[in-house]
Length: 81
Image (cartoon, rainbow, N blue to C red):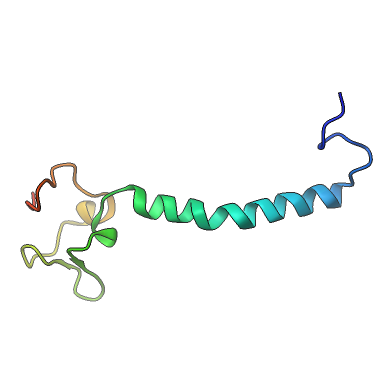
């Protein structure tokens, strides 16, 4: 069975161009997905970023692990740290 990847009429350069175009279209959406998929400080509306890095809810700097990975205990604007 002839598929686009083993079709002798399609050159390796054409396949490379297709792959490059596909990756250029997918990279921005994949990056957005990973940046917003975890509820963590950098994408929280209550986080005041660089250089202060503090939570506006309790005026404290969260622990590094909370900043990086988020906290499953964060419910109803209660800061667990």
